Amino acid sequence: MADYREQWQHWVAVAALPRVSPATLYQCWQQGWTAPRLLAADEGTLAALGFKPAVRSAIKAWQLNQGPLQQRVDQVAEWRALNPALHHVVPWDSEFYPRLLQQIPDPPAFLLVYGNPAVLCLPQIGIVGSRHATRQGLRNAAAFAHELARSGLVVTSGLALGIDGAAHQAVVDQHSATLAVLGTGPDVAYPARHQRLAGQIVETGGALVTEFWPGTPPRGGHFPRRNRIISGLSAGVLVIEAAPRSGSLITARLALDYNREVFALPGALHSPQSQGCHTLIREGATLVQTTAHIMEQLGSILGAQCERPDVERVADSADLPPVLTPAEQLLLRVFEAEQLSLDQLCALTGQGVTALLPQLTALELKGLVERAGMGYQRIG
Image (tube, rainbow, N blue to C red; front, side, top):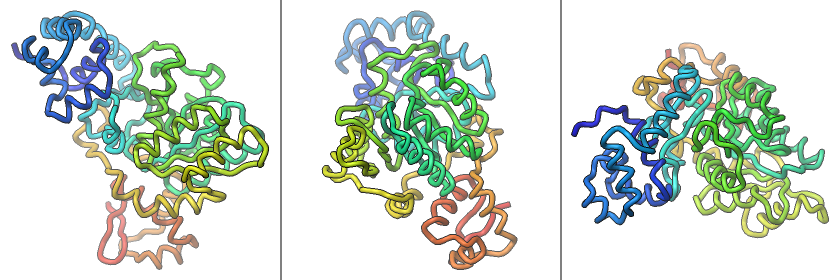
């Protein structure tokens, strides 16, 4: 029987399979069993693959256009229809699904995105830390987020109180894009006091991202799953204040497992909020005191790790304009018709190579600048 459903619906459906983890699904995909192929398989094939009767029954019902998988797809379709311009489904095989996230051992089958999905494929830096941050910690989070966003990175965090919120707020205050990964459904702002911040994130060209169904409330088990997405999306993770046992350390250690760069800000010797960062530094995280320390580590690898999506091939987001940080806007104005070398760009902007390279990489990813000979030139 032919299946005429849209491609994204298959990826949403496999995510709804009972007691089948993202890691198990990823193993299937690695063996060529993509979501459409898996959902079209007969019961004997599914049994040979090791799927239990409940899974086989759910897939059989799906093939008849009914059952719990179809109900989940209908639920996502209803959420999507509420605001087609801002509600997006990004399945695992989408051009907008981040390549870095595809590389972790248990990537989500799909992401629900409230906002601009283009930011998913821009170079990202995760910033995480304590919910009970000190005033200095909050100032550090805001300062680092501000400068890293100015350098062309998308600041990614978890919308939590404390360090997360300070980092997001500093970015939206300069009208740059930031990405918040949720431990709830895309329509549930948690904590409630960050509802306004969540709206600002969307308004300034960023996005709220989740793997959870619409309407899903916050639960303790959701946040480690959210943390793996933050680590998976990011080229590096910066930890600013963390207790010895905290979600921030989970995020950092996942980043190490995923072969990402981990940075930690040192603090007062006897402060409980500094102990997690000091532990990470002892375990091999890079001690940082300025954003230059981060950009030195990330500048040379961002271009290779991140790819710009082919916007024309993604119908839902074809009309979305590129998100430009203020620094990128200023840099773009420097270009005229001629090709400019890196030395010329440094002279014209008054910036050093370390600051310029991430901005140029971001503009390349957004299709506004290209390399030409020994320099760069503007496209269009």
